[in-house]
Length: 166
Image (cartoon, rainbow, N blue to C red; front, side, top):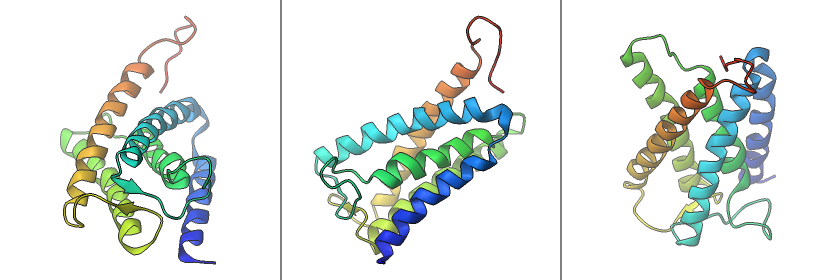
């Protein structure tokens, strides 16, 4: 088993196992946050691949898509899901900012290291020094927009019964 295959396996197992630890009362919030962020990463990755900015030499669905499925459609959205589930909404602004920086950094440095040390992802434009900056900007904007949407969505009632996401 190559390091790329091991990482792909890891990227399948971790999100699936992590769903076992979602509190029962927050399952719907977890699902909507996963799907919303999944939509952003899907669109962003498709655009980057089509413009020739990123290439995924090793991927599991070679004929279906040119995008790395496991990291962009399972692993990264599951990190955002846990970001939402553990967000310190009643804490001071500094803790909220640290929460953002911590979760965004996990994604940025994971993506950066797999692009530098494996064949799972390859940046075709920019330098190795400019990529973390671009990644921080991209994922920070994804996080802010998705978090605002989740906040708006969770404050609306469901099916007119007054139920609210917690």
